Image 1 (spheres, rainbow, N blue to C red):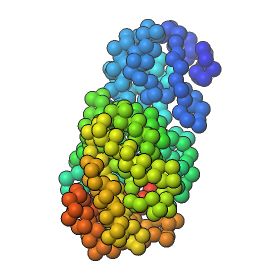
Image 2 (image 1 turned 180 degrees about the horizontal axis):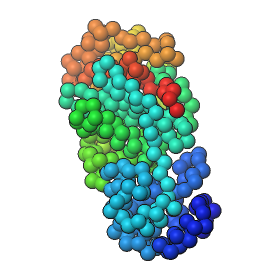
Image 3 (image 1 turned 90 degrees about the vertical axis):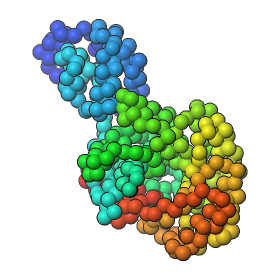
Image 4 (image 1 turned 45 degrees about the vertical axis):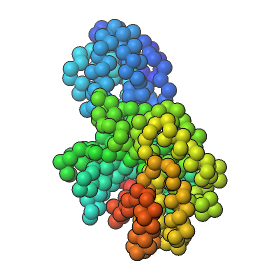
Length: 383
């Protein structure tokens, strides 16, 4: 028996030997930067789980039952899987572990927005946000602990990237935020945005795996059209999304439509300039037919002039895009930035609309609890 299977006592081992045959293991890659005591069962594909069951003299059809417990019901213990035999539950408990995140801190804004600080199995923290509006219930979720892109206006950009989140850790945020929506508003999530901490396209495989579980009938069963993934602009990964023919929506965090200004606030633009990104977006649409959103935070006296609006319109022209104009939310470490006035914001949006662009002005939500766009930065203290 491999060393990482703990022997609680000689009696316990003898009992297991009687009720279950010797276990045959499948190699599973551990979560990044950690040595797990037991393999994470939620990193097994259903086919791998069926194979493990068959090799250990259990019926392979139990794999689908187990998968429903793991994802649809999001259980955290094998003993709760009551439609499985005791011998199978004990065999699973000996061989596999759970590594879920757990809410460490929950804050509610005066506008109804809820922010959760999630504690991970290795004591790292990430944040997720529930944003309720009249017609939507949106979960904003994180994909990394910290971020490596160092955007100058974003609180997460001032953190070092510690690691990628595993797909189950991304899924858990959605599940927990959906529970908050049910408990507080008697409504389920309608939309999911990968716009929290981290750059989703630099955690590519876990991004796709988490979406797969979210849309699966054995998971939350959401439509991929209700999911939007936001990127700071990694052109080669946008091409990869297109080639993989993803069904979810894509948003580009643009924030300036000339290279000089974008270079100043988003270092990623040095290697992924506007023309490169525009070509990638065009390819993405041609392959997927999914409409693209351009996210544009309006900073006072930086990117808010009529010339800036015209640059943004010219960047969007010919692309099937909608433009979200976003109010800037103050970040303590980015004190050089300020919010554009309401008059300037409305004039900026009106200029684009008059040109024929599809424009939405996104008002800040959850600013009093640092849950608004650009403010997520692990301020949770309860660990």
